[in-house]
Length: 404
Image 1 (tube, one colour):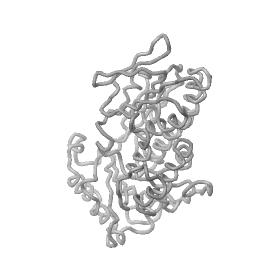
Image 2 (tube, rainbow, N blue to C red; image 1 turned 90 degrees about the vertical axis):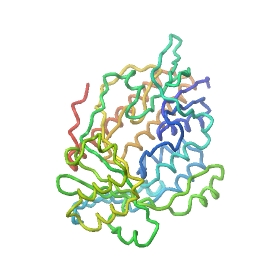
Image 3 (spheres, rainbow, N blue to C red; image 1 turned 30 degrees about the horizontal axis):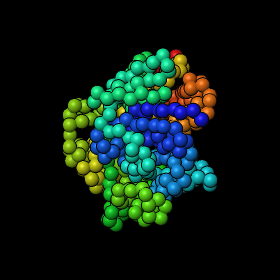
Image 4 (cartoon, rainbow, N blue to C red; image 1 turned 90 degrees about the horizontal axis):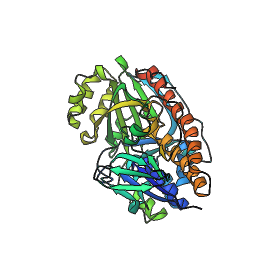
């Protein structure tokens, strides 16, 4: 095996998963993350991990870390149902189960918990406060990454896992566009710490994901995270070397609307406190079933934050070199089908396999070309499917024509 050194720009779920896979394969890796630390900002709460994500994590994590991931994941009913705002059932969807996978292939995971599992063992390889600004490639085939703090790093491969605002993408694929999808989301969580709150939540909305559709295409997305055992017990039993923050059961509660349906500008929206966002949401839910307004009223105001939904526009194949892209940096999508994180994890698994082939002697650009060909197929396929469902269900802007 030849000596490869891989630089990863971005320490989100996809970048860390790639770092874990390369570490397990014995390939040198450094992760550069722009945030000053792992707990710097909200990055969402509950995420769905499907069969693709589970398969990827099993391939990339140590057996102990994977077992801990599975033990700390919730296993809600494998349903994705839709109701109207008076809680009349519109559409029921029972998802098929895969007995070979934890939760039958349908898990609800706390993002922070998964992130801490993905960081375990990589701590010395992650550099915080290290935002990529540009890179340069050299005749030797190596690439040097330049960071905002004035430092540089040189390696054999640069992987842009630096999210929707990727500086890597801007330089590598200047023709690739990311557009506003026209939706605004308000993420929050409802702690399920007492029986009174649990009693408010109808059992019908405790599936993998529930959409409640209201007038003018306003909607609520609801999904539980319920732990099967306390985290400290799971870590003590399975992986004592991994430290997890304590957390309790909660209901993820996401309000969404077209931007023109909100009584404020984007500038005002992104400057509001959680309490003001909650009050605005309750005003926009007037006339909805009282259970829905009661759920929103029980959100932790400090947990609420806004998000502008954006989506990539698929692009044609590009010529491979020693700089490639992963996750939201290349195929950011709306959350309409809930596979963004899973697609990034799949990227990490596929790219790890291709880089292992390169370390074993396959030409590096050929290995990266194989990764990019595969990634474009499933990644942009998910972008299109997400945009289509978001348009039909909640009025997301149609996806612009692909740049082919």
